[in-house]
Image (cartoon, rainbow, N blue to C red; front, side, top):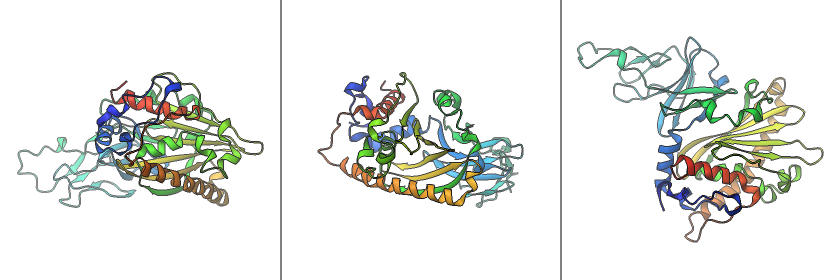
Length: 356
């Protein structure tokens, strides 16, 4: 089984839902199809607006194999630009910073913050050169609650349509007023779906989190709301025991992973995936807070340590799952009612890959 046919067997009923076949996680052909039909056609979260607060601010990233620059121009507009020079394909920027323009280090072609070609030395004799047609290609970019999203599909529907169902669930949380206060990074030698699936179910609280999350937010008290067919997200509510705080898990498909912590104050955690190939990605766990909590160094450090501990517990099982998927004896298995979020995710994959 290869390509996106691995999703053709996803059940239309939760009661008969199964886990995905191992080929969905390990086959290169599946990942290539996902890159084409998902990562290059869906809205992907890439940054926060505070990372691009001032004119001239920029950062670079690779999205589905496309090297990009995110920049804010002099008028305050955000841009998602190809960072490959239009002359001979040299990257025109690396890392992050603040600049007046992007200058290719190879032949010094110079581009504005909006991608326009500003100058190109010694091109006056070229009849093929048209300065107005040699700007850096740009891609759709939009902001939701302070999160910056990019879509590599020039014909993409608006971001608001993709997040429509999620919006009312977090409308009162003030996500736009938060900022990143700490980030934890982890190289992750797994298929990206291994983490997404782990993220959207609480069933495993009874296993790797038996001494952590299971004590504060027991698995059997958590629930996933019913969602209509065609929904592009799932949610997981985690009611607490007395004295603990509730939290909600949201996943805007394919890979917008968000936790909202609602205690005396509200904060959030954003899991950002930088997907490399069918068996690896880089994970950045970003902690978001509002003031005055955002300036409380002790609170920030304590929160980061708790999240690090929980993710280390998750690393052990994700390592195990990734290894187990390589076994010739591995096969799809039935899902628990506590894994409804996985079923939502699988139905999404089936739909967007043309198997729905």
